[in-house]
Length: 317
Image (cartoon, rainbow, N blue to C red; front, top):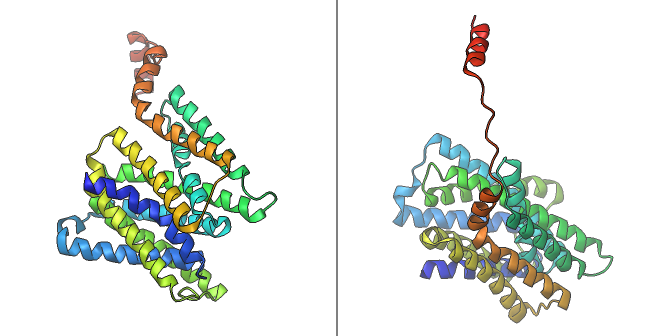
């Protein structure tokens, strides 16, 4: 329970440290590379000392975690570039919560039935995004470009979650976490090397104290992964939803106290609507069962035995 309570604290601090680091003059590509590689290195040290049994992986699992890490790495590049344009940790965190909407769309694309409650949650999330984004600076191209990058990051995060669920069918969550973070670090490092070669980007912030914020960002990233698999995997649906709510609350509170960020009345309405959409996730299973009773699937038409036998005989060489 202690690990589960610490998880939203660490995750909620990530946007704040990211904004503080960017303000010291570091570019998003370098920030993403340093943050992820340092976090992956810290995880390897901890696992080598205390959880060595989770460092073993089979080839198929290695390929699966590579896909998960690559998708998550590309999403982090969009996230920090969007944070640069928005310069608002609270808004960035709220827009990132729209991954639930993209996860819903991916579930529908996979052929799964979606309940009316899921559709309602998606509508609430869209309304919340509009209220959060429309209250930004009027006519600011960077603002809307940042919103678009954040939504792209949320989409890739939803894809990463979907892929992670498939990969974890065959391996423990700690192993998946370790190797996906490693491949995530390789992805952003390659992107940084490519962009840095043509853009001449420095490997650090322009202000020396920015290293403290980079270290803080890498620290909360690694610690959130450790506490996540240590405690959250044993919690139920309601507790997981409440942790998501706590993560949002931590970011809003710390951004207000440390960065002086404030929201307009319309944006607070968007926060409330987004919170309702997240809380309704606890009733998804009940809604699917009710929807299945009201709209049961149509039975397949019966095929006459004689016709089926004749058809099979005709197809036999």
